[in-house]
Image 1 (cartoon, rainbow, N blue to C red):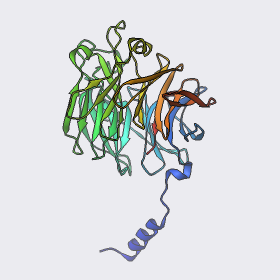
Image 2: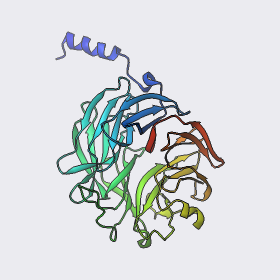
Image 3: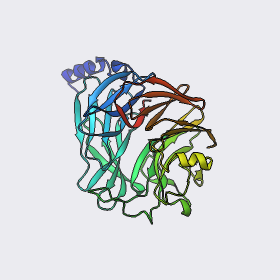
Image 4: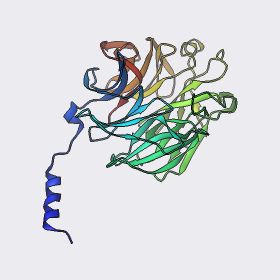
Length: 351
């Protein structure tokens, strides 16, 4: 039976204002970077202004933002040695996540729609078999895991039904030094997991493209998945780095002209969708490509070490390794700011 004291405590808890992202300026993006010798995570607005900065224990890769609370999880570059839960209001570390023995984080994670669950991209270290770690978010304790449906999962996105779409890159690596072990036999795929973790759809690349590792994902409003690839085969071969997938169908590759494909250097770093257009970055090639919703190539813009990209209201925001933040659309790149840290691979949109 409930006590009067317990009832009053519950009322007091309900009366407390809910903490939200508004308390830290309502940032639009999270991005890791390096400021001097210090690795950092920034929250930024749509103009590239930094709203907060938090030091990290090492080089960050991607981040996951809680849908309502000012909490972020910063993931190390794979193989992951840390995933840090951060209070973005105070700048304090809430906790560090540790995968089970014999597992490694793989650079990405995402919260559930309500924020009560965090999903983490992981591998079994000895075999590179993919796992999706499941963590409740009151104490950030591990409560389960799913099979990712392939080898070497990297990016994943939350679907509207509570399931996940996962980019299984297909590359098995040595757990100590990341030596690639199976380039001749790799089989990357895109896998759709239902809310119960069961595989509901899956598609692989055609045999002649099996060395094109599927790495990063973006979701269109109509449910299609755009994916970015990194070529592990003969460097003399120009291959597409962009693909599209409607679950239940085959993967569609979207090759640009041979000249534009060459400029990508076989490597796509990040991908985003905005207003029916797709942006694809290549830090190795020093370019940002813009494609239509059907994958048709629209434009290629030159920018050294451009990698992070996310959707904005009127196009895209792009970050580069020189500390600059850019607005991007099919017409070109427009400088927003140039005084940031050396931005790392990803720009993660909130919301």
